Image (tube, rainbow over all chains, first blue to last red; front, side):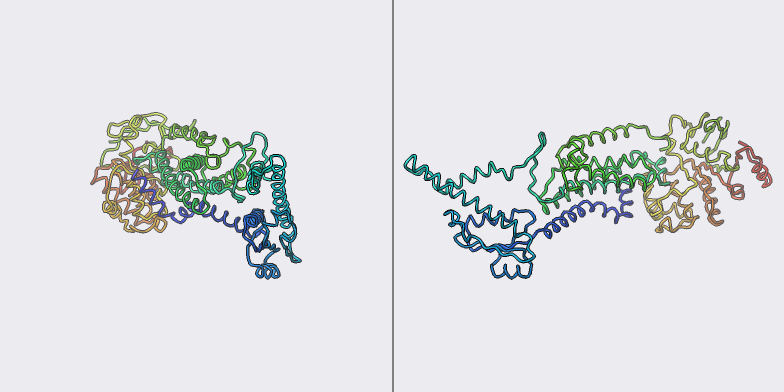
Length: 371
Length: 223
């Protein structure tokens, strides 16, 4: 093995630029795509200013409600600055939450809670206004319900056992548990998946596709070396062609897996997305073995690379890793997806098994007489 | 000693080699001549274990080509007509690369000496920078890294200048005499063949080469 490492290093020394490029490509491409889409999403959001003249739970809850709205970017700032930026059209609209906001809501007093400003170019004014109105309605309704419950308690038991705060808290708990507005509807039999991020791409899905591409394009060394006139000299060496290719392939896989581990740590620090190393290993073995076996079917790197691009595109679209919709992925069961070790966390699925069996058949195949 | 007995090779119905028998002794340089398609390269491929004969027996130092191929390959050095080297590698890197994969260990100094013996001094130049003659010399040098007993060369001097041809021819002759190597090679250069070889085998049905060699004063053997 030491000899194989030495000879491979001699090749890598000549190809270090290309090697480094394909080693770093999955990480760089994933981070770039995610960051660009994140930036685009931020730019696409409508800027709305909020002026807080009271810092209570109710006003804070309202701000959170506005912030949670997709496509709206909320900025909290003083009133004069907010209005200045509105005039400059830096802000789409401005909402000032006045003092005594919480108290007025609890008293079911809905007048002059919030003042809204808009310009002639405002887009988000109406939806944000509606959101605030619905929130105020909800909170005043909750307060009114709490008072009514207390009144009923007094009427029928002569004393109040619950405070307004208790009733409001209980009401919020019930709402959280049975909130119709945020209930996720799924088709029967489908699993509901948690997706806290608003990203259109799955980080590991994207990385999986870029890794597949880099592995495929790196493994054209199999074709280049098999077709090289120098390679038949192996006939008169201590290594057979098969063992030479196999050990070199193992070396490539090892280097790629070490890069994967560094990538995993980096992606965790950048995006907070972690992946079990076992899944990473299974996926790495899967794609390297697949690329290795596929390369044996070609005599010219051009045709191999063309097929590799087509396969990567197919995998990207088919698994939903490249298209930011779940529609494309839904027809493909997790078990049959090549990205299954990454996205579904399956260590055993169709592709690792199929590639494993094909690899064993390749190993058992008798080497040609001159090889 | 290499013994070839009643060797035949056919591709489908086409008979390429028919009942060839000959012997090569240590220290001998054998030349193979004949027109294109006479079967010279096919014979060399069989002797280099790269192709199997249809019939016949070949023995190298009493080891059979049928049963002891792996052992026999350790004793064979084959120099193909094509330049079988890594084009991006320097002379040094090519020598080191194939030494690493070889059965025999040779240090850098020994590898360099091997090249110098062939008058190949451009140690650090890449193969693509070398002249045709230098490439041919390196092609031979790499085949000698594992110290083979039998060296088979397929037109080792094709398309190179006279000086390089003379260098290679004198090196091969010296190698056979000083290290008791058996050398078989094909060439269309009859001047070189007649000057270098101890025996010349004529292959094919056309008597042209036979007659020309007789005109050179040689006694070629018809195979």
